[in-house]
Amino acid sequence: MGVLEYVLGAAILVMALFLAVAVLMQSGKDSRLSGAIAGGADTFFSKAKANTWDKVLSKLTIVISIIFVILVVALYAVAG
Image (cartoon, rainbow, N blue to C red):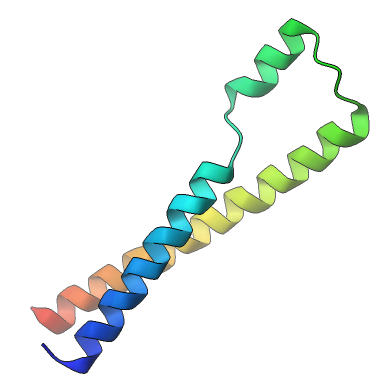
């Protein structure tokens, strides 16, 4: 194995870790609905703040996923 394969493999491991953390930090889509039905005590500002954080995490997940796929394809091209 060459040095490039080790570097790409390490980068894939790091991106996989970041991807898992980004996905796990996102709130579920059903949590907002159950909070509305149960009469949650969220204020307007906390809902807006959470919504903004969810949007950032969603975009971050997309970017990390694209980088992950590019790294996997690059590793396949180098090793293949």
